[in-house]
Length: 85
Image: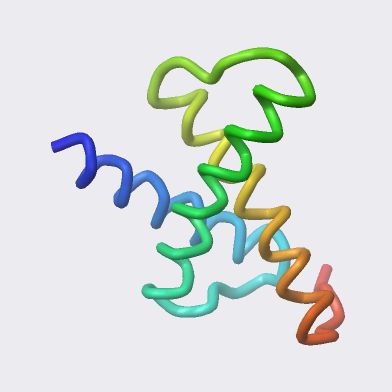
């Protein structure tokens, strides 16, 4: 059950990050991948750099969005796409 919740939160976080960073998502599959990997990256960033743990659904979602935004920024740099405002 936690895996399904992790994928749902990751997918929503990836979709939100796609909207925040570029004004559009990358499609369902890529948004879910960016959100899930972003959750892992965001968790690492928050725990390693700030020294805190994200506890709870809302905090995990915020951390996943932050991590997914970082990954979307990296994808934009690799693809050399300008960020839309």
